[in-house]
Length: 303
Image (cartoon, rainbow, N blue to C red; front, side):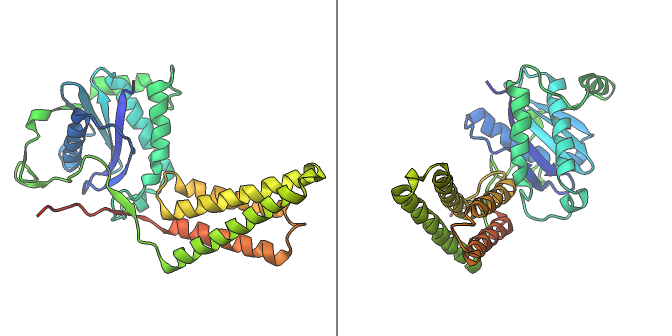
């Protein structure tokens, strides 16, 4: 059973969410705890560096550093020391992945949502590994917590009335990250069409080799694999552009490299112009994938 259930990275000065774990847990208590976490994220300037919000079965722990807060929801029986070790490691990874100056100027929510892949990796180590490979000293965290224990916040003190906290703080609504990709562009649609064309050409050539040249030995088999791998990668590029997928900034360049490898192998079966066409489409698709950013999904206002 998971003990660390949810992780959240937020900018302290305005409560702007920067990243979060894309989890799919829907228990009522967890969803309610996420609401409390969002409220607390809007009032982090009122708290010291570390704090804990306790409820019956779930606890919220948070720590702040360099104007960024790292928050998590854990089971109540999960050791506090380990929870803050998790947050410290999360913070180390976040600031090493992104420039602080960039973090403090972004304006759209979840601008660093691709960090979710790192969150999931760290969560897995703390939840399922018998001995997490801690990058920080548990002893140091224990000593720090004894000297400056986290401020305790009673969940009953978080009063929400008509969307405000204590009558003056705006509540960021929603129990989970709400985001979507920007609308597709004309060039983006063109890249998808060209990618489908390249994928179809790869599939046709691959099937043709299977029908006529598969008996020619390992060389023919390698070409079949290269054509079919290029076909699958073209389809994958179309999917990456049209739909959100975590770690897309890693997967898109990876797909581009695979297409380069496949076409290099097929040099004898394609002329230079054909290879340049396939590589050009792959580069265009990769650029469009990386250029299509996430935007905040508008919330239903209700009428």
